Image (tube, rainbow, N blue to C red):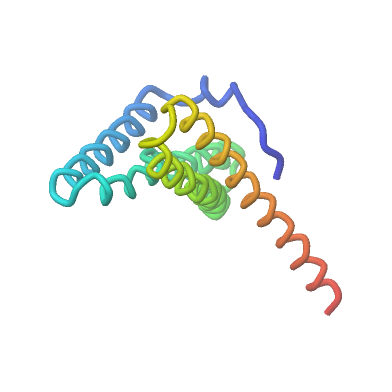
Length: 150
């Protein structure tokens, strides 16, 4: 899978798709705020690593793929679920990097300038997320080679 940016996708979404994402993000943020009041910021901070729009984006990806396949006369449910799963896998890999970001910010902010800590934590998030993605890709290649040898 190649990583890329598709600006055309911005024009194909409807306003209600963005409203759903905004609603999910807002609800998760409110939930995290309530957790912070009840259990403190350390527990609530764990939930901020959850991509707030993931529930909305996975359902919208599935819906859009099914609609696209229907226009071609195909069913599209299996393809839609597969694409939603790929999106969720990518979010999981990014969340692993967010854990590193959070840990670095938590440990370093009391001691170092906020700008430096956030810059360092952002670089660490990117590097760890990229390393996890690359490791997953290498493991898939190794698994495919191993399967062919059998």
